Image (tube, rainbow, N blue to C red):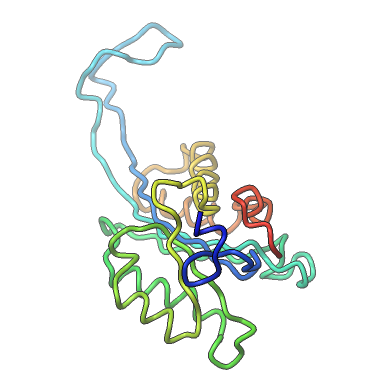
Length: 211
């Protein structure tokens, strides 16, 4: 496929994974079961349809991850063992082009590629309309970086999707701490800051083999 066999601006062939940043967004809902409705034998889940939901709260998260640079000593921010992770956690529904542009600016401002072209990064994301807005591409270009869309309908090519899965798995383990929307936001932010790991291996797993 062109994505894997052609260099930028068509694909990512030959771009070291340490220079890639993968971005996507996802939503998390907090649902609270009402014990007044439904029953089941002990140890079994309720299967009968009913009004079990007492309220739904949603967080929208934009997440960006990098593989890390093997030339940076272990433990130092930006290294393989401590790669950068960027996140925007909000109660706003969906992701507008403006919100995504502001997030992209925040991420890419980490590397001043205008002053030092060696710091140039390639942003990869899916084909969501807000991702492809002209103002997003202009923000990337102004900062001296590149951007490439991943192939459509292939989330398995996105390392960030596996990072999102890590967040969901850890949140499931800490579910009792998420008593309401604000506490869930705190837990999610803590997980993103401390629990996302093995991103270099994940980039390799997704096919980004150059480094």
